[in-house]
Length: 77
Image 1: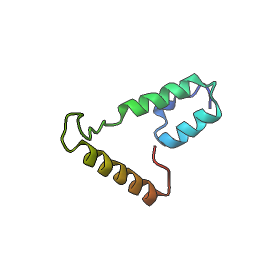
Image 2: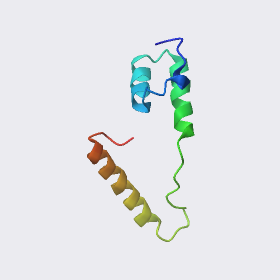
Image 3: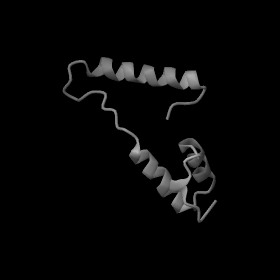
């Protein structure tokens, strides 16, 4: 898969691209493509440090992520 245009491979999922890179760590283009995809994801801000409900919001977010991972049968990333 080296010398490929990873950005154009929309059929290659983020997870598949990650797995490919982990097997082919010398492929810097795959790493760049994976990191670009991660950067393109929306950044959901859960809370701020000075929020009085900080602990509760973090706990709820962790539970949501664990439940989503359990529903998919995958580990959360």
